[in-house]
Length: 319
Ligand SMILES: Cc1cc2nc3c(=O)[nH]c(=O)nc-3n(C[C@H](O)[C@H](O)[C@H](O)COP(=O)(O)OP(=O)(O)OC[C@H]3O[C@@H](n4cnc5c(N)ncnc54)[C@H](O)[C@@H]3O)c2cc1C
Image (cartoon, rainbow, N blue to C red; front, side):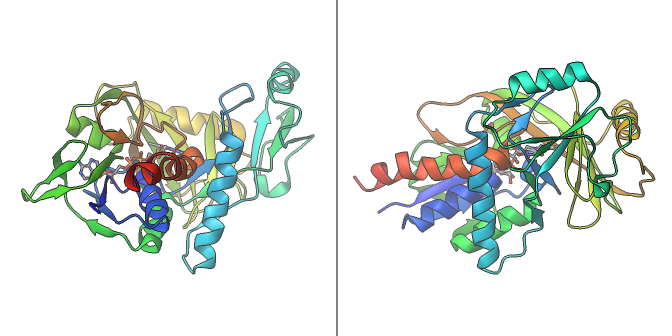
């Protein structure tokens, strides 16, 4: 049987390779190893997004699935810095609180607190704090590496310069034949001429975390493997991938928000991480793909990868 060829080793491609090999499908992963949004040092896993309490469709199942996968990998001995102890969301006033109460489904797991626990280090002016127990954070790069290693997949560290549904041409002109799934994210979509929305975003890497638990309020602060992160700024959407750092205007915005939120803000910066989020793609119908996951790669990516294997790849490859 010809193999499954996955293009891209971010969370989409790594999870797909993992579930495909678990299902006994021979798989090859082609990864350029460049500009992966999944290298994010600490990503929130939080099904409740935006400014008013809407729950992402399939977000609860997606988060639970991601956390179960992390637990499984941890049991296998992989060290993936992460935590599963919820997300705190401060609200500034009663009007906002009521808006959230109206939008958040009553049966969605949550609790309204008069104030956050001490280790969250919020300022006292916040009206209330929403505690969302189904949530946490994960080190993106460590997660992808563990998935690739656990799948024992053959990884080819090259760029796929062109591809169709059944053939991939690598940069050294080697040709691979098999069933192709494109998981190339922002960088890969730009190389392949796939249209979509690209949004450059940045996180500040801090020597010490601002909060022991994840906090999300327009910005987010989470622990990370080393210290913590404060993010994210997002620049004006663009029609293609464009790397590079954090404009000064965004840095001011981020620091202002952090000053309004946390009681102890004396950050010692140790770096900046920039990535490009990809969404709203017009994907070629003839090639299978799992990409354009927007800001939900770690929330939905693993579950979508598993569904793609179960619902499409197993029936297709075992015909
Ligand atoms: C600042 C910022 C903060 C974020 N915060 C969160 C968060 O809190 N929670 C969350 O869930 N998500 C978050 N995201 C979004 C998340 O990072 C993405 O949804 C996810 O990483 C996308 O994964 P992917 O596998 O689709 O693509 P990517 O991670 O971009 O991976 C694509 C891979 O494919 C490779 N590739 C591309 N083209 C080719 C080719 N032709 N040949 C070979 N290899 C190729 C690339 O080199 C790369 O390694 C954030 C993103 C940013 C930028």
